[in-house]
Length: 233
Figure 1 (spheres, helix red, strand yellow):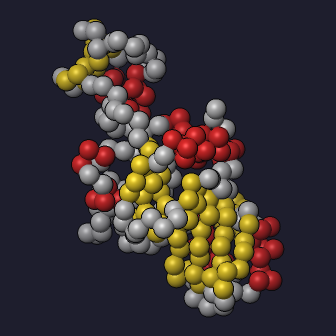
Figure 2: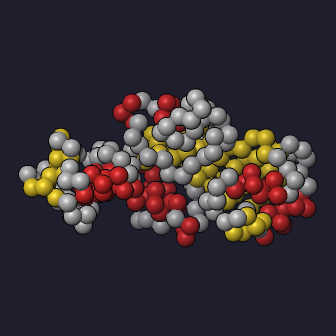
Figure 3: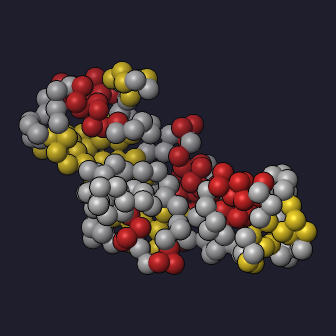
């Protein structure tokens, strides 16, 4: 395993942050100082970073129901609570796989399985994300083809994979893209304001009736289903 990935799994930060620790001479393997980013860690190696022995954490997979008004971030801004305030301290370094903006709520996946996160979020995988959308007024179903064909944003054409009308001002939208605030911006381009946005599904993983603000460990079956959706065996 590459040293930067190993350190990240030990909870020392992102891979880039771990590379800075390596380059600064803060890592020793089996008593030998290393500064080469291409260094690998073998089973049985003793790794010391910043003066202490570090070991990879147990791989964890959490489903979190993020409330509206809560930041998908480690640092608070403007006094707003963060996602990590919902978790016990021992899980406070667990990375999130994909974000939700502050106003949005619903399903978030947190895991230190970096390979799975990368596979789930890579554009080539087209992993579906499903949202319940409540608008400020009744939705015109004749606009569905425009959402499917795509609406041009600064980043390019933003498309919905599927759109279903659930009520007068409520629609269910499925995306396979990951453009920032995509649903809000697409509906704004059509003259609507999103009043409430809830992610209910990530690939095969569903929010279900999980209470707002709660977290839970995924079952082995759910993890296996996510790996298959991401193209992993």
